[in-house]
Each structure stands twice: as C-alpha cells, then as structure tokens.
Length: 394
Image (cartoon, rainbow, N blue to C red; front, top):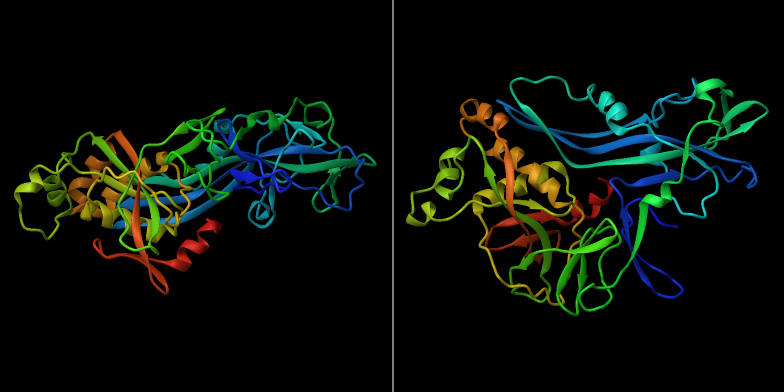
C-alpha cells in the first residue's frame, strides 16, 4: 500500500516504475478499523491539514516552531464530529485514495474559508517583524465514518459520536466527489530517452542515469530540471542537493557580494571581485531540522559556493531532493532576516520588500562521508548524519 510521502514506486510483480502527481494538493485517507464489516457503507469526511515550520523574524532575531494543524472542511458538518484531527494525522498512517477504494467521499469546503481562519490563531499580528512558512504542506485528509442504528460511528475507533444529523448536516445527502481523479500516475520513464527513472520513494526529483537528466512531476507530465554538480574528489563522497537562486529584491540593494557584506556587516576586507560577483541564495533541497536549515542557508549565502557547468552526476550516492524550489524562494527573506545587521535598520525594508526569483537551479555539492557527519572541506560546512536520517519525520 502506498504511503503518504510516496512519489515514486516500483511494482513488486512486474517492476514497472510509476510517479505520483497531485493536482494542486495531496489527498489522503485514514484506513477504517479492521473490525468493521467490509460490506458496511463508509462515509469519508474531509479535513484540511497544514504542516510546516514557521520562522518568525523580529528585531531580536529569528525563531522557529513546528506547526501541524487541521480543520473540518465541511460547510455543514455534523454537530458532534471533531472539529480537527488532533494527533491522528501525526500518529496514524495516511494512505492514497484509489479507484478501488470503496465509500462515499464528501466534497470539501474551499481551503481559504476553513484552515485560513484557523491559521489566524497561530499567526498573531506582528508589526515589528514577519513570518514565513518553509516546507509547508497543505493536504486534504478523509476520515471514515458509518451509520449504525441511527447513530454516526467513528470508523477509526469504531465508537458512536452521536445521532445521525438531518437537514443540511446529513452526510447521506451532501455533495459527493471522487478524490482519486485528482491523483495522476505517470510512467517512471525518462521523457527524453525512455530509460527508467531512479530516486528515493519520497524524492521530488527523479534521475535518468542514461542521458544524465533530472525530472519532476508537474500535473500530468514530467518537467525537466536545470541542474549542476560540483565534481566530487572521492569515490565515497555523497552528493547533497541545494537550490541556487538568483533574485531581485525590491527596496534592498543586494545585487553584488559587496552589498551583502555591508548588509550583514561581515568581517571581510574589501576585494575587487566583490563588486563583480553577483549574489545567489542557497537553500537545502532536502528536509532537515529547522535550526540546521537556517544555519545552512546563512552559511552558504556568506560563502557563495562557486558556480559550475558540470552536469555529470556519475555513480556517487545522491541524497533525495524532497523540498521544492518554491520553499527555497520563501527562505530568502528568513535568511536575510538572520544575516542583517543592524536589524532595526534593515528589518522595515525587508518586511516591505518583494522577492522575485530570476533563475533557479538545483546544484549538487559533494560532501565527504565521515563517521558521524558529512563534511565539505572547501566550505568547512558539516551536517550530522543522524539529522538527515531523522528528517523523514518532518
């Protein structure tokens, strides 16, 4: 059975590879209790879920918190059903919905009318700073219910929650849908040469080792990704993916590296190349703890790794790229918030600024594999291996 984060899977019988693509947002379901009679008609009620890391920038610095909230997505929900999923979305396995999934799925209310209102509780007004959500995922989750003796029964706990509602809240008469129609299965074959695409099951980026190209699903097709690779020096080096972004930032003069030196008050001596070198912003294309994520974005912004035209990935191990480029763009403001000095001078300008990406590329940087960490000797950047292993929980 397919899991929540599955994006590439291989049939165990025929070895055919398939990619999973969602229209607008992912849709999942909870499996009903195995104690329920298989012939019992099930009703799946929709909930919106928001999950991600929220960074808050203020004159005193940048803080972060993990957010995981959900909200009933029905215009007329039954009175005694839970308004949110609580801890279920974190503790229970989520499954994809297929055409073979039996049951009645109710049409959800628009996201902006439900979870957006709930989100205001977690985003209080802040006139002295700003907030950005990085790595956020908005998804729709269906919870099973059924009717027994005029009682509405929770299909997970197999316990009654109250009498069956009549009128507008009657789940038997509300508008229905089939969510699996918005889930697309694409052949896991390279559109350029027809070779099998490879990658981790949760990776957004798929690799063709035959023609050395990278792809990701977009709607009902696979789109090619611009990428580069810094050449590894050792056979055991691990290639970690990072998004390299060039952007226009209104209200702030940050086009050249000399501008960034002044903005961040970096302890560096003036150099002729500083006025020639354009600034690029870097963000991990992989999930990592929020404190490490911010450390990496600020370190790489200061270090400005050299660009490369090399496009040969070779046979080195590739870490999965499971953080989309749009999240990397949103991290630029947070990175600048962590770098700016003095904060009270630049923060109002940063809040009012508009960040427009002009070029985005996926760059693989080689890291030496040590006992407990991955280390880049030229940049002097290290990442704990356990942090990478535990990133799947984010």
